[in-house]
Image (cartoon, rainbow, N blue to C red; front, side):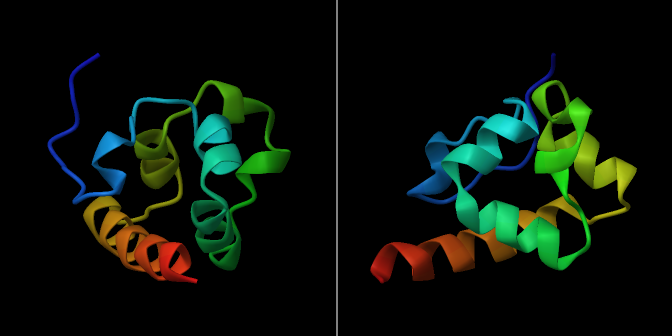
Length: 81
């Protein structure tokens, strides 16, 4: 599987975007909240243990770089709380 061309600034640089979305949502509640705000409820989906964030973005017509940038901002804010 090819590596994604997007990189995340620290502290999210260690996030493996090729992990199944279900695993990312368990590790990062901020991401889960962001997707749910968009009406995307991956936790309830049977495909969550196989699909990646890239796949979810494509499936739901999300701009992945914009999503990653927002995630970084919200994750940083959450880490400061």
